Image: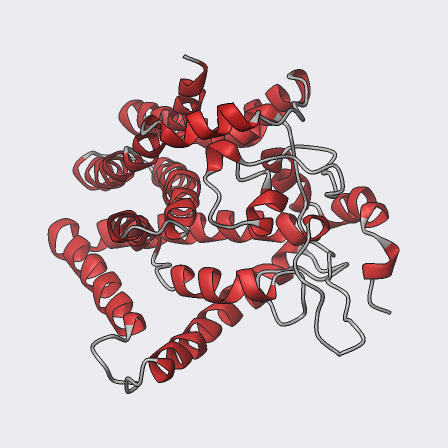
Length: 347
């Protein structure tokens, strides 16, 4: 039964469904739950730094339930997405309700869509990667698969990485630099992959072209079925999901930099190059994303067996709470800057 704790990740789409169905002020229940209630729970529940034993690890890797808990997000995400669009376009609602509904669905996209797509994108099977890419479609962020797997994990904690926030960079500045640089870098990486496989830029193997086609088709389908309001809903919720993802990217590596060796190359990625959090609620809701140091140490490791490393820099709060703090840069800098190793701060 303890393994089913990750069902708590579905509490976010469940809360979103309640808001979408009943409307009124309840449309803001999802942001209240995600960024007020969960942070409070993180402060109440103790931090859990324990790692599982080797025997338990082998047992958990054999249990398919952990994989199916990820796959289940596919119908849940698309169900919430289209239920939200349907409710927004078929019912008479106020402007504030439409805004709340868009924010709620956007949070679902950030947590249960992009986050799960991130986990599945690291898997080796074609079917799992397919589901991962499909989960990125509603957020209009399919290029994330290319840039994250072939760019971020290679350049994390270096100035070359768009998804690594600089010391003293605000989250609002990071949103712009990360979003646009990641997209440009995804095209660059795609070009190199095609060249390595002796394929031309206009090859049918160019995934970036397929991503544009699929994402555009998705939006046009929404426009055809639900008209302008439906398109606004789909596009607006995608933006919220993207900003939530980038806010998490911001806190994951903020101010951390790999040092250069005598040869001029960056040192290999170590446990100290990602912010770790063992706050239990955030760990469960985000499928252990908060044990980010171990994820970068070995990206192929499945979420249910990620470890805590003592040498990893520890966040004073969980990821959901940290995202809220990042929204107030002076407070974020005051709390986090003193925790960044001095040798990593560029002068």
